Structure formats: structure tokens, C-alpha cells
Amino acid sequence: MAQADARLRVRKQDGVVHVEFVDRNILDEANIQQIGEEISSLIDSESAPRLVISFSNVDHLSSAALGTLITIHNRMKAKKGQLRLANIDPQIYEVFVITKLNKLFDIHDSTEQAFASFR
Amino acid sequence: MAGGQPRARSNAKVSLLNEPDSIRAVEREILEAASTHGYPEAAQFAIRLALEEAVFNAFRHGHKHLPDEPVLVDWTVSRGSVRIVVEDRGPGFTPDAVPDPTHEDRLELPHGRGVMLMKAYMTQVEYNDRGNRVTMVYQKPQDD
Image 1: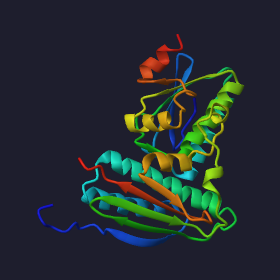
Image 2: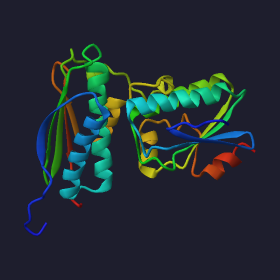
Image 3: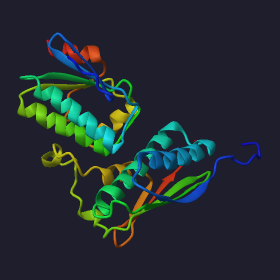
């Protein structure tokens, strides 16, 4: 993985791509767009990708960020990939509940649990 | 408070350009005022989210064809409530016509959640008839 992206930390472990956000606040439209593009290129580089997105550094997000996550979800689905979200702060998780996106995404309490769910 | 006056400014009218630094500055000032007036973290999360959604909508939709025009943000923080008015110069929209984004058929659509989040997190959200100005109020819970 030769990723040196500003907005994401990416590593690959046991065939699973693990993505973490650098920004605590994934809000700015430019940031969101860049995050979406970076993750999309990761998805495109894998066949049947397995991806864990960890929110451990994130303390705020917006509907635009949710939109990007949905686009990622749809892209993963098209590639028959598997997407997990993990480490979501309770306040942010509430946003997923209000929007009912907790039903769309496979959300795990910890990154370890998200990784274990692939086994 | 022991009779002291809060130091942060409690209200302002700001003409805001679509620049992340300017938007963040207004957001910071409102949240500082809210913090000074004793709004808990959950309230600040709610106010911040609603403000960002309203400003994002104003620029993204209201000023779709007016990219260099400013959006007006008029805010007041008091002990009991936070009131934020966001007005754009666009043609407006009909908020009631925005379909329910939580409907099963719409869950995979990447847009259309801003207004619903504003309504979910603020005590009151009202649009003017033209639909280019939203007034949002957050009422501080009595037991805080």
C-alpha cells in the first residue's frame, strides 16, 4: 500500500484494508470529497475488497460525510466487497440512528471486532 | 456565573463567504458563546451540526448559481436558548417537499439528510415562505 494521503491513514492486514481518518472533524466539503476519492481508489484497486473504516479520531461529521460513506457503501456493493464501520463515538452513532443508516452499515464497537467479523 | 458577564460575544450578524476558515470561525464563536452560557457538550454537538447543515445547504443549493455571494448568519446565544438564522440569496425551496431520507427506498441515496438532521437536533426549525431563510432555535434543557 503506497498511500501517503493527507486525509487518511491506510494499512492492510490479513487481506483487509483498514482506513482511519486523520481529521477529527470530517466536514469540510473539500475534505469530504478528497476522502471519498481516496477510499474509492482503494476500492477500485481491490477485487472483492474488504474494508474497515475506523472513526476513532472523529468527533464530528455532517450529512455530506454520511453521503460520502453511502457512496462508498454503494461502490463496495457493486464490487461485491464487504464494508465495516468501527469505533464510532456515541454522539456520532446517534446520527446514524436518527438517519437509520445504522441499518445500512455493518457497525462494530471496535476495530478488532470489525476485523473478527470477516473470519 | 456569580454575577459576572460572559466574556464571549453573545450575538452577531455575519456575512459569510463559502470558505472553510470563515465558516469555522463563526462556528467557533457560537460554540464559545454556548459554552460560556453553560450549554453542555451534547447541546454544542447539536448546534454545530445544525449550523453546518444549514450553511452547507445555503451554499450548495441556495447559491448553486451564485458561488461568490455571501450567506447571512444572524445568531444569538442566551442563557436559555440559541437562535441561529441562516439566509441565502437563492430562489428558496420547499422543505416539506424533501422526501423522507429514512425510507427504506432512499437509504442508499447519498443526499437529502441535512434538513432532517437540523430538525432532529434543534428544538425548532422554521423556514420563511420563500424557503431561503431558516430560523433554528435550541432550547437549553431546564435541568442543565
